[in-house]
Image 1 (cartoon, rainbow, N blue to C red):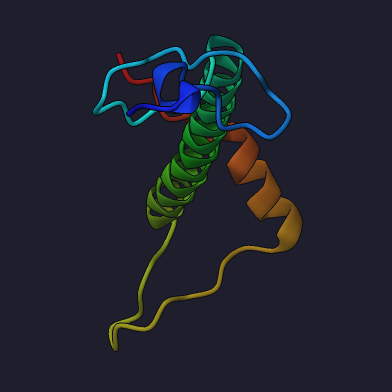
Image 2: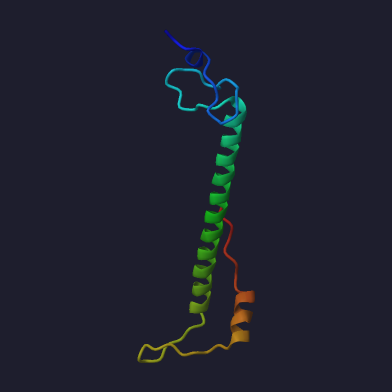
Length: 106
């Protein structure tokens, strides 16, 4: 004999007495509509935050690579293959200000 609990499936969030949104036997989501929507919103917010952090990191990496390429244009070597130091801090800052910026991807 089935109990009332099995006939009327409830949300598993403590204190909630609403029926589950998905009542099928093999349902994996055991929340009511309200709590399911809240969980989905948290998931999407976390996903957006991770994507934003990944994009920022990718941008920093791309800018570092781009600046290295720009400074390579100004580098020169001796016959022995050693680099000659040619820049002071203000000159480096000026090169960074003047160098071409990476293009936005299409």
